[in-house]
Structure formats: structure tokens, C-alpha cells
Length: 252
Ligand code: BTN
Picture 1 (spheres, rainbow, N blue to C red):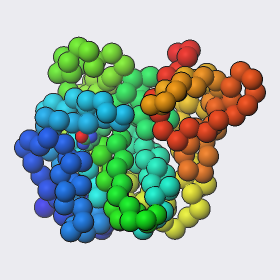
Picture 2: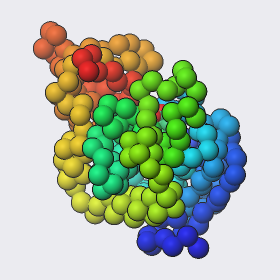
Picture 3: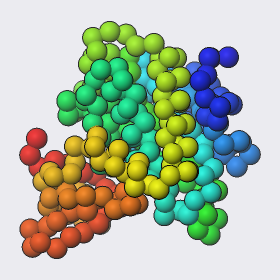
């Protein structure tokens, strides 16, 4: 119906003009839906970001959630965030823009955020029943469409490219790229994907300050673990692994 290039992702699509959050809808239907089902909306009234933050979702963006059933242990679910970030960055790079990934999940162009990913999983004991990949991409908005308090540090594909982007063909390309990365994820050692991710990440080697709900860790980002946790070397030379948090670059 929309000229899909994929055989798994997007075979079933739930399209909404307006929704609270595509992740909420996806979680409600995930148990009874096939793997690959897509929930997508023109606008979200209650878009959610990581760590309880709001995600501004006006007209012109791509706000969607992908339901996957990878049958992996829960501790590996965060790997899918890296897989998704890599797929988004690759598609944007194919448009000629220098997209980079800021750990764990921000895709940025010239240091400005163009995409965020919110991965949510439900597990039975340690097996994942489903994973919802929530992907928000600032596509055709102008900066004035983003409320002022959210504007700093953000950009859109239209602003960066200086032209309107065809969202349907972007979506076709993205779903194909995500499907290929997902197949790699299921069939290859994760280290392969991690290497590709590392090549596009601009976090490793930087002085960072990471805020988690319980504390703040400062030091140099020296790597990621196989599960995607950030490894930080602190001033006292000890290392810490952080599975989730908000990362700030101490120097731009
Ligand atoms: C972040 O960077 O904090 C993650 C942002 C994730 C936003 C997307 S938009 C589609 C999906 N629905 C939501 O409510 N959030 C995600």
C-alpha cells in the first residue's frame, strides 16, 4: 500500500492522525500483533522521551514504534537501541548528511539532535516477550515549529538539507535499513554491529558527564560493553559501566 521494500517490518501498519504516544499504543497491542507491526502517527500529544522527559511531536516529523519479538534475554534489549540508532544514522548519511550517534541513542547532525529512540520491553522471567522501538525523527519541521525551550540543541532534516523531504520514501528506506540491521543482529555476533556503531559514534574519546537517576559520573568515555553500556574512566583511573543515563559532552 505504501510501496514497502521490506518483508518483515511494516507488513501491518496502524496509522493515526493523532495519538498520545505511539509507544503506548504499540505496548497495548504488542501481545496480539505479529513481529514487525508498525504504529505511526502524524502528531503525538503525549510523546515521551527517555528518563521521563517530554518529546515534542508536531506535524512534519516521523513518530513511530516498531514491535519486535526477538526472543532474547532482557539484558540484551538495549542492544536493539544501538541497532536502531545505527539504522537511522545510516539512512541520514545516505542523504549526504554527516549523522553521528551520541551514546546511547541520539542521532545528531553537527552536534544537533535530529532523532531520539525510546526502547521499551516486556519480559517473562528473563525472556523478552516483545520490544517496542520508539523512534522520533525531526523531518520536515522548521525550527519555529519546535517550542523554544526544546529548540536549542535540536535540528531537522529539512533545516540541514535546505529542502522538503518525502517522508514516505524516507520511511521505506529506513524500514529496509532497520530490517537488514535486525537480520544482522539475529544472525551475526553482536560485535559486528557494535563496530559499525562505534564508527559512527562521536562519544568515545570524549570527556563526558553522565547523569543517572541516582548519581552523576564524570570522566572519559573509553568504550562500550557488548550490551551497549558506556565505559567511563574516571579521574582516579577506575572504570565504570553505565547502562542508561543522560550523557553530556563536557567540551563541545
Ligand atoms: C529520547 O531521545 O529521549 C527518546 C525520544 C523518543 C521519541 C519517540 S517518538 C515515537 C515514540 N513515541 C513516544 O512517545 N516516544 C517515541
